[in-house]
Image 1 (cartoon, one colour):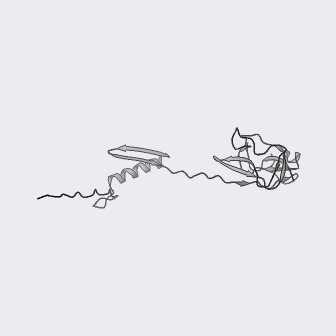
Image 2 (cartoon, rainbow, N blue to C red):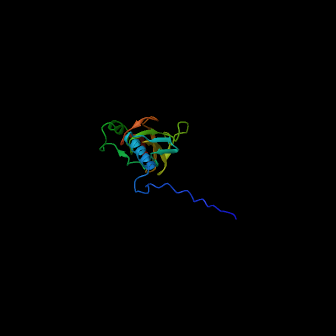
Image 3 (cartoon, rainbow, N blue to C red):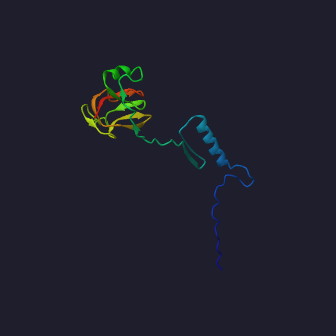
Length: 169
């Protein structure tokens, strides 16, 4: 006669033991999580007694957002005090829609989006502004000719700073 022995499938580790108490593994995980939060850690790795655990704090994904250029300023209009001398020199300027780092091209070795004397059509990308590690495209709101680029590549700018001296076409 043959005897057949069936092995029971291993039980899944539950978060509570039979008596209703938390399992020691769950207690350890909670302690590690609390330690991670209390010490402002982004990652913690734990390997002891056959338990390997890697906790990583999720970071929100950065999504680039195209930003439309604010309305071009006409000389004599209300403006920031720092930008006033630049605006008085030129009839119209395109202002920075947000604070950040000004870039003329997509990479340091790439040609600039627009050059002085170039005609720009409505919707064309004229520069990038990096804010919080996100590159925001600045687009022209109307057809114009760029007479002068007023900011150096890679320089910090504030919202409302004059970027380009232009003339509407």
